[in-house]
Each structure stands twice: as C-alpha cells, then as structure tokens.
Image (cartoon, rainbow, N blue to C red):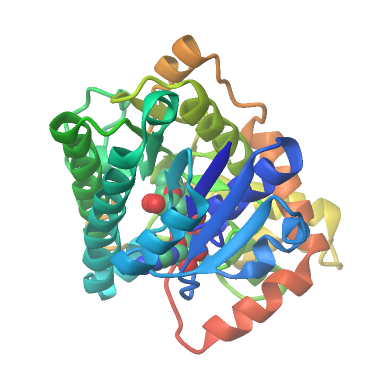
Length: 350
Ligand code: NAD
C-alpha cells in the first residue's frame, strides 16, 4: 500500500516510517514541516529505500497537501503531525490551534476531495487515520480507566486542540462518509524521543551531572507505552480497524513520574556507574508543579486487544532498559539537540 505519514520526522511518526520501511513492503511518503520537533536524522536509516519519499510541507498549506496527495495517491493517510508538547502549549497556545485544528481541518478537506475522485475498490479501501492522545479524556482519580466511551474533558491547550481535532475527524466521518479511524494513546517513550520530554531529559541531565527536575512530588501517574508497540498498534488499526471506530492504545504500565525517574537512575547506576559509590538518584530535585497538571491517566485497551488482537510486546521494565541503552549508544543523535535547545530553556514534559 501507499501510506502518507504526516509528522514522519517526529518521535512517533519516524518510528512508524522506520517500521513500515523495515518490516513491510508498503511505500511511504513522509510529509513534515520540520519544526523544532522534527529532524530527518530520525529516519536516516531508511531514507535510501526506494519505497520512501520525503516532502517538506505544512499541513495548514492546502496547496502543498493537495500536491502531495495528487502525486503520491495514498491508499492510507496516517495523520501524526501536530504540536505535541504540553508545556509549550501553556507558553504559546497559538501554534497548537493553528497546526492541530486548522492543520487537521486542511488534511481532512484535502483527503475528502481526493477520496471523492476514487472509485470502486480504491474508494472502499481508503482510510484517514488520526493519531491522538488519551489526554483528551481529562484526568482520573485514584481508580478507573479511560475507555473509548469516556466523555472528553481536556484540560490543557494541547489536549483541547487534540480533542477538537478528534471531533473534526469524527464529523468528517459522520457527515461526509470519509472512512476515518481515531486512536487515542497513552504516553510513549523509546528511541529518538526529543530530549525535552521526561525520559530522555532525565537521562541526558543525569549523565551531565545536572539536577533531575521532577514536578511537585512526582506523584502524577502516566500509563507508559514503548513507541514500537504503538506503531504496531497503528498498523493493526489502519490495516484492519473498522472505519468510524475509535481505539484506545495503552501499555498497562501505570507509573508515578518519580518511579520512572528512579528506575532510569537505577539502570544508569548499573550501566554507567558514577563512581565513588554515588547514585544518580541523588541528583533528583523537586520543582514547582505545572499549572493544571493532570493527576493520572490510564487506558483500558481491551477493544484493540479483543477486536484486532493487538497487545504490547514490551513491559515497562524491558522497554525502559532498551531506551536507556539506546540513549547511551546514541549520544551523537541527542547531544546536538540538547545543545540547540539549551538556548530556549524549556520545562519538562510529564
Ligand atoms: P513530535 O512533536 O515528536 O512530532 C511532531 C512532528 O510533526 C514533527 O516532525 C514536526 O516537524 C511535525 N509538524 C509539526 N507541525 C507541523 C505542520 N504544521 N505541518 C507539518 N508537520 C508538522 O510528536 P510525537 O510525540 O511524535 O506525536 C505524534 C502524534 O501522536 C501527535 O499528533 C501527538 O498528539 C500524538 N500522541 C503523542 C503521544 C506521545 O506520548 N508523544 C501520545 C499519544 C498521542
């Protein structure tokens, strides 16, 4: 199949592109604006494949989107391009409204125009798959899980913009009959994660002997999913999912942020000891909490398991070990990004 991936230079999009080129026979067009969050070094290992193409473009630019679709003639559009960092959405929500809402509208409008020109089996097979987050559901108390029927209750400008984009996708399905799919996934981690997000940030700071800043008491709970498990779920959904349906994707790995940071420190203590018997955990410090910080997210992923047979291959323990090892082995990928970002110091994504 020909698969157009928006945001294929970002963290999850690039994992999807690498998977599709390395493990399938699908063709891929990566459409990405290359914002601060996207770099082609994430897809370098597959870029020479004759099944891979890249177009630099903005999803808000209807003409650019139309041109890419007309030329590539995708059978599937997987839409991942977004502004994705909660802290940045608090500092400057405008870009989130533009890319996540106007950009998703533009993708839908252009996908629909193209889909209407298709006939027979090609029209039948076409899918528009929107990749979204569990943050649209709001925050949980001590118990309970997000299901696909949980009412939307977004709390940050980021999650509100993603909730809005989900509603647009769903409306294009209901109103215009566009064959849409939506997945809402929990927090991802793994290789090529940008070093301003919690896990890579902590690894980088630990290695540099800097304080490890944890919001408040670090008792916020997230349900962590290894990124390669997420992209296997995405493929299962766009290949076999039922149009019009939403699927929650999660790893069944609820952890408090402080536990995540302590686990990283323990792995580093083993793999790259600081010497003189000191532990990286001594670098942990508490910083003022994020405004409106959601307390707990947790996913019920039984629909995608029961209907499509997807289950994650990694536990948190195996995934975090792979991730820490990857960051130790790939300092030349993340060090230049850390240096570039030091200029505009950011908080932490949790
Ligand atoms: P990311 O920030 O790492 O990557 C986003 C990519 O989109 C970048 O390559 C960027 O250059 C590109 N982009 C941004 N604005 C664009 C525009 N206007 N036009 C074209 N390209 C543009 O994000 P990610 O973590 O890979 O997330 C991908 C998607 O998955 C997002 O839609 C996000 O909401 C969703 N998601 C992320 C997580 C997570 O834990 N990271 C969890 C659930 C869902």
